[in-house]
Image 1 (cartoon, one colour):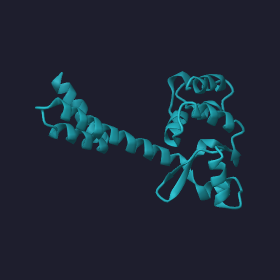
Image 2 (tube, one colour):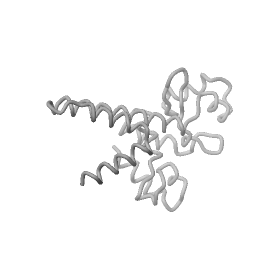
Image 3 (cartoon, rainbow, N blue to C red):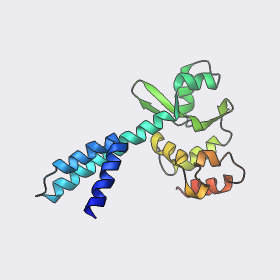
Length: 167
């Protein structure tokens, strides 16, 4: 069992450099106090997961200027008005606001976006969490995400059922 665990840790560390940081926290944690050990390990893993979620969020987003061009809006403020009115979800990170790309289709807001956002808001107001819900590949959708399945007539009903079950 120990050799197998070490081999798994080695493989994971080789594939995921961020895992090494969390692993180092565990290795350096004192063994005499379980509370300190648990808190440090949990904090390191939570930090890694937060960074990963933010990175994946940014990979699937457009910045304000891109949304402005896509929607053929005159000003960046028009994009931010849509955001402040709840017509788009987005998150400010640094000096930019990032908008998940699944909100758009054919150069417009998705026709069903208001309903999608309403379902997501029953569960979360966080754009990163909402994006994760929409883009996570799901077994019950044949490995597709909710965002992908909503565009597939045969899978749309299941995707909506998943969204409706969030609240």
